[in-house]
Structure formats: C-alpha cells, structure tokens
Picture 1 (cartoon, rainbow, N blue to C red):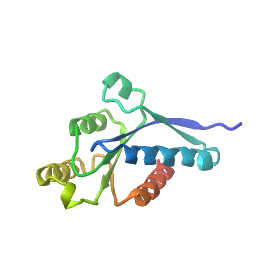
Picture 2: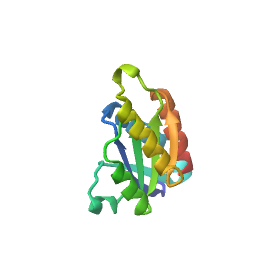
Picture 3: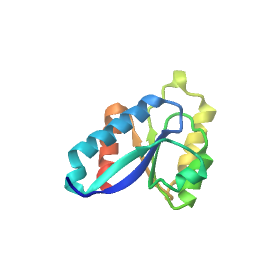
Picture 4: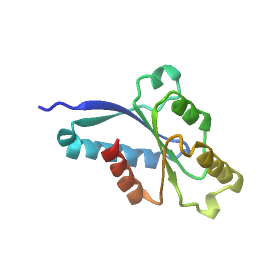
Length: 139
C-alpha cells in the first residue's frame, strides 16, 4: 500500500476522434502503473462533460484538438474557472480531410488561448503518447 494525491483528469477530444482519447486514457493508465507509487501522484480519468457542476470535481482538463474544434467556449470557461488546462493540437492536416475555414478557426483559437493554458503540438499516436507522458510527469 502507498499514499498518493489523486488528481481527477478529464480527457476529451474537441475534434470528434475517439481514438486519440483512447490513446490518452491508456497513457494515463500506464503512467499510473509505472509512476504513481514513486511520485505520490495518481491520475483518475473522469468522463468528459461540459456541465458546470461536474467541472467543480475536476482538477485537470486535457483537450485534444485536430483540424476542427467544437465548443472552444468550454475550454475558455475552464480556464476562467482556474482549472489546469492542457491543450494538445494535432499538427498533421490531411488536405483531403480538412476544411480550410474550420482549420483556420482552430488556428485562431490556438492564438487566442495562448498564454492562458498549456499548449503543445503532436503529429501522430506515438508523439501524442510521449507528449502526454511528459505532461503527466510535470503536472
């Protein structure tokens, strides 16, 4: 048995792909298995929700963003509530699957939120895993 501080971690995709959410959840699970005892920190994934009463129970929000973004106001609300917010942007854009106006909205949002929360870019599943693992180490 060991003692650890538990952080409730909300992971969600602001661009509709659940594969990245699954990858991120697996990274958290593995991080907990490998590092929770040694660091005294445990990350407890909770269900993604934009309801204000459920946000009160969350310590960290990790948002995954691709080539479009749904509900950027939710992220701004989390920042305004003083939550620790980490946004991970997928910098791979397939021109066959990207609507320029939607991608431009992502870039605009990224610039508008810069300095208010942690922001990083990833390119694929492996770089997402490495980036998230590093992020968990520093939270």
